[in-house]
Image (tube, rainbow, N blue to C red; front, side):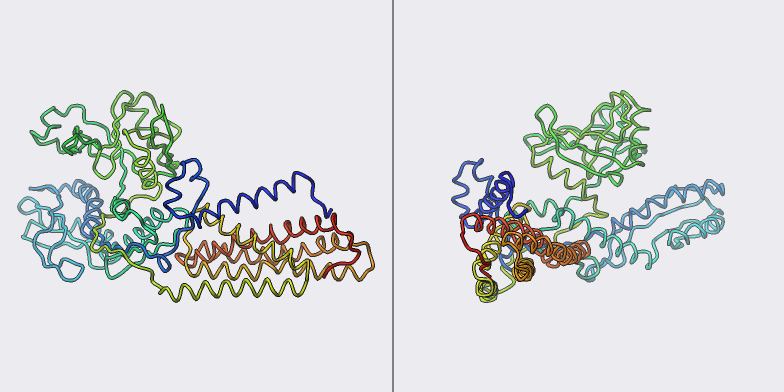
Length: 545
């Protein structure tokens, strides 16, 4: 039917008023918003302008390559020891990793200094060791260098280093993007630059230090059992810890900025953060904590360690810092748990974000940081605004001249559509760049397509000499299928752009998708409501189109 029920009319008006209220927040100065009560200010949201419109922060990062290669060598040590035991080779010194010393910095790399595994066999065992390790080293992309007849250095091949570095950089870029732009609407620029550097540009940043803190954390999460036999002197650093243990500081600091405690933990990692599926901030006893959920493998390992070690302390370690050390009260078999550590709400939210995004494969060093102005000149931005306004006026003028009163209804729906797009962008915290504005301009033209189809169909129906209301209802009912087909196909293209694109491409896809959804609402629902009101108050017998 042409006429809506009371609750439908109320819902349509409520949506439009809410959209108008949210969109108005973009035109209220920040000083006035800060002066408002928090409950009132929370109703208003603003669209963040992109780097090309407002400027932002530019950070150049460098990945610590030595950590990548060291981790690969550490992974291979267990295999080396197994080969040595299997061939019953007698060693003078067990395999160990030496830290690089010396070398020369050339560009982004240090030449002549590299991590290596050093093995020293007993006299006469060198040849046997070389023969036993040959197949193993080939499978791990390692090469054997001879220091003496019985002493060897094992290093990564050049091809292995290049492959590991390329993989680590790609993984790091993906993690940084999830940390900065988890919702996919902020439009940062994150790209590889050179052999081991990453360029990050983020629009509209108000706290650069917070961004650097978020980017710089490795966020490597591990779970270790407390070594309860370690002495007080070992915990205090008076004596060396056992070979199978590590000594780590507490997350909490005293007034002097020093850790309040140290823990001696077993070196073995029972579960790691790579098995996390999700992490969220929740409240327990009115205190913020971080809840986490493991995948099937992580849940199985977590359940096993908690079942076998009830009553012992299981430390939660983040970047070599103990953030929580609870005692296992009972087996936790569901794969869910919480991390408590006296966090503030902001700290808990940041930790949850870091855990969701995943751990960086290696630490990052900030090489350069600077604040950048808008990439486009003020003239270019103003030209874009003028183009959008001219396009809007031309579309409105065409619709009014072509369809007269019904054109006025379509023009009203188009203005309401723009308000709803702005409100939607504000609510989701999207970043608006010039491609995003292009998406809005494109939507402006597309939004009236539905009305054109409907009005032309109503004209065709009016030639049948039927009743006025019947012609209008038939026009809407018979045009709706075509409208849905055309908009759904465009929406599919926008979704694909969002899924596979990045940066400004995603911004264009977001504004285009929102414009399609809101235009479907305004062009069909709102114009129908306005025409229904006109019929109720008008005495006209002919269509005003």
